[in-house]
Each structure stands twice: as C-alpha cells, then as structure tokens.
Amino acid sequence: MAEYTEAERPRSLDLLKVRGPMNVPGMARLLGVNPNAVRQQLEALHREGLVEVRVERRRVGRPTQLWALTPKAEALFPQAYGTMAVDLLRRLREIDGEGKISKLFARRTKELLKAYRRRLAGKSEPERLRELAKIRDREGYMARAQATGLTEHHCPIAAIAREFPLVCTYEKLLFEAALGMKVERTKHIASGDEACVYKTKQA
Image (cartoon, rainbow, N blue to C red; front, side, top):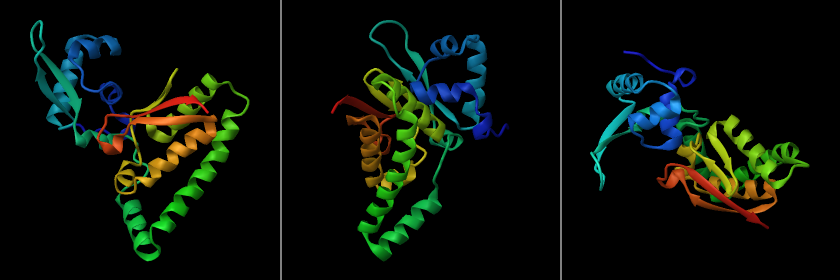
C-alpha cells in the first residue's frame, strides 16, 4: 500500500480539496487525463481510506458517483499547528486567562500586517486581492482571489480555530487592515464549511 506525503499527494486530492465532491468525468476533464486513469487512482485512494464515494440521484438522468476527501486525507495538506500548539494555548489560558490569549493573537496579527502591507503597497484593489491570495496560498491556505473577495480551501490552523475562534476574528481584522476594505466572512472551515470565504467591500 502506497504511503503518500504532503509533497507527493496526487493532483486528484488537491482538486477534491478545492472543488469539493466530484464525479470521474468532471475530474478527468479538469485534470486533462483519461477517465479510466482517474477512476483507477480514486479506487486506489479509496483502498487507503483517503477518499469516499456516494451515489447522488438527479432529477433527470442516471445517478452519478461523487468522490470526496475523508478526514484521513486532511493530514496530507499543510498543518501549521498541531495538538502541541493547542495544548500550549490551553495551558496559557489556564495560567493567565483569555486576555493573554487575545494579546498573543493581537501581537501575531500586528507582525503579519507589517509583512502583508509591504507586499500590497502601491497596488490597486484587484492587485491587492491577488497578492494577498498568493501570500496566503504560500502559507498553506490554498487561497484563490476572486473579483468579490478571497476563498481559502484549507486551514492549516483549524485545530486552533475550532477551540480558539478568536484567531479567526483577528485574521478577518488582518485582511481588512491589509486590504483597506471591509471584509465579511460568509463561510468558515472551523464551523464545518468546505472553505473560508471572504467578501470584500470598499471601506
């Protein structure tokens, strides 16, 4: 049985991460390969517990099989923080309270903002969005810019975000300060959505 690593994960897993559940013909078209090749790889990934399949019935036409990632597959995507970081934050909260956690996240946000602003300086609104997406993508968020905002298909700090949602509040503030625009988060990975989606509007 093959053991994939983050660096060696198949493109099909990346596609399912970004697009969500898909059928074989759709994946083959986007990957530019033969459907049989996609099916064979999915079956191999299924045996390893990395993907699962379900049948979706349509109003018109035959039912179709949709393939999706399993929780096990998430380990193949960037994880910037793990259980150790969460445990340390818990201990910090026990010793110094929520106020210390807030100060920690605020300091992190301030440092990131300096770096982000240097990268975004002098750019137009669309250029700032695209540059922010590049920064976040490099940080492991699988980020993509759209005309209306930013979508992040992966959260490498999800373990922290679920127990310390304040970190997400500070990330929203970071985006607003870096972009110079108001930001509304309409989807949230830590809340169970498939992506974090941020809509922008002029401040």
